Amino acid sequence: MKKEDYHGGTFAGNESRKLLTSVSKLKVLNPSKQCEKFINVFTSLNKVVTTCYGSNLSADFNENINEFQKHYSLSGISVTPKVHAVMYHCVMYHQ
Image 1: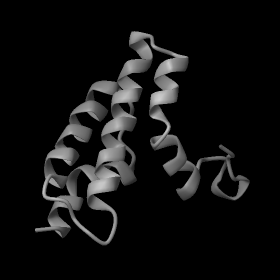
Image 2 (image 1 turned 180 degrees about the vertical axis):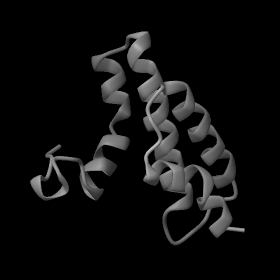
Image 3 (image 1 turned 60 degrees about the vertical axis):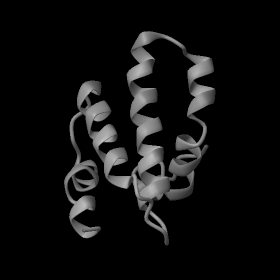
């Protein structure tokens, strides 16, 4: 994966997607308990993306958002505006 300089050195769309779909490789590289909380965040975010972001909305998207919110909260990572939008506003737009 390659960070793009024009996004402040962060991962952009396709690279972020590649990360989310490669979480199993991360788990093999670092199976520690400390890494597990991030693996849970990435795995649950991938479920949100596949069930909520696209042309078809899956019936279980709300449960996937709740699961992501739980794992993210347990991770200790600060909540960014984009994460807040996923956790609290995606459901509003799909009701």
